Length: 269
Image 1 (tube, rainbow, N blue to C red):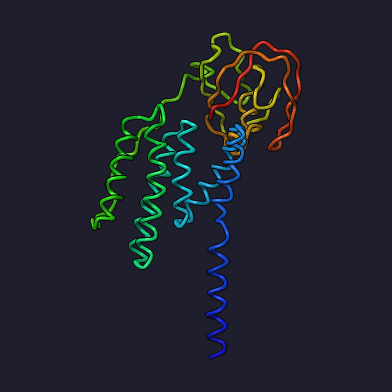
Image 2 (spheres, helix red, strand yellow):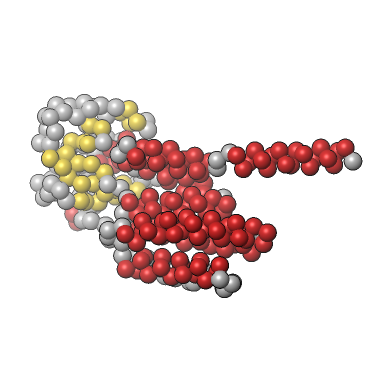
């Protein structure tokens, strides 16, 4: 009997501890938000990506997924924003079926966070009509569920990936040696650059704002937008030149300081 009571007390203690501790996904989300709040957008994105990875393997983190849907839309990554919103809703529905005693708790959490995110998603400039319709339909389902409708979430069509801006390399393609020095790239315009996995690092000048002769893919690693091992497609925006460019070491890449230079670029994704 003593052993049984000891086990019960231990379980209660563990449950209480677990409830008090933020999830790993929430910890990464909060870290990303701190960077984002200080307008360090490139530094925030890797934390959001890790929060998403962790939350996708922990269905109880529906709140994190819902919060991330708004964050990714701020980066104009509409497909990932919808993925977080879509999976978060389905996770909540699964919890209702698997844990009836928690059904109202999870539904109330879902409604609260979905409605908060819905406002941000619907008001976000540039959101496609497909995404707006999908979000609206899903929000209606959540409301109907609370009214007793036990049908599963509607099977909505995933919105298409937002069209990428023109490639930095034009029809020639891009790689890790590609920079933004071409005279065809206009200040104030955005361009995409594909960085193959496991590329060779190049030279970069600046921090957050880079000279236009900087290796775009290497700068993307330095900015935390991609990793050298995985690569990925990044989006830059051309900017005017600066009087100076700061050096720094980030994510295994060291940038060089430089003085006045004619043109620059920054990452927007």
